[in-house]
Length: 486
Image (cartoon, rainbow, N blue to C red; front, side):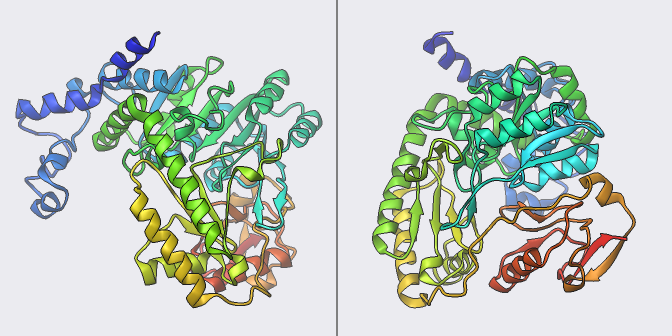
């Protein structure tokens, strides 16, 4: 397909067009939802707007059905696949958590092994709880200065494949939350040569498909499946996502897996936002993301000129564990000014009305995408300079490492459903955890079901709590107690 044909096709937005036609039909609704185009809930209609409420509708013949699309949703999926260079694409309305889980459940069943880095999002391990697959972790290297986990080294993946030839899949983060990319093309080849699938968590990689001078996308690298958060850098509504598949994967099988857990009442607000956002990126993505890269490069230079901070980028690339780096990521190391990342995160919000993506114990991430402007970046840089001047401290005593190698004792499913008891945190050393503990965001578990609890891990949890990280996962909301296997 030449560029002119591609542009002509990608200019379509079939779900959006169908909803526009539906709005003009003035249909009398004797179906759900019960607000009846907003008339039944005037406060909500005033808050969200009549246009929004009028297209919050149920599946019907003119609008197709997400569970079994045959018309406008089907066409929107085909256009999405074409834009992303995939064999097929599924519109997902349960967030990229749902996309990741469908990806794992499509390739793994109880007892199957899957090779993956331990610094995965909790949605990956949730999927293992659901299906009973066994994780074979490739523990990533850690940048000791920054305290962040990196990508998977090629030799580590090769070693895991050699030691576990019966594994069914290899999963790769492309990129990590911090912007680090593994050599996904080499990993895809290793997986395929061993008869395994290669899956990619591209929650933070939508722009890889549309921008120039970006790391390679999973589909371009030959991966079999990829979960893509269109709502993160692609501009669609929160909770909308896309699941991509390659030629080696059965579309019908994946659809069945998706329908096991995804709602039968797909939101047309979310689906139309995917449709419109795909059109926008296909037609204007190069231009938009070139601007985002320029903004990120400008911000890195300005923040590094402030002193004390380190806004890191492509200079970290080493050809293996940091094979490439996402140039749109504005990740900033804060420990050298004596503040944990979460402390800078809180100060930016509370003192300067600036909300960034997250802060952990050593770094912050300001998420740049298609809606950002240079003047807002200047405000961020100025605030960081002032925070350094007003709040800097001696960095001695700050914890640095974000990642602690786990000891896996049993599968996540076995541990999650096992008989358990609740113990005070400090009395749980040596026991096997039966639940998750994580800082959210980024949602990478510090502890997962089936892992041994150590003093080092408890020190990290208590330090993160003390610094103000938002901790989630355990039954005990205050995280004073933790569930362990009896």
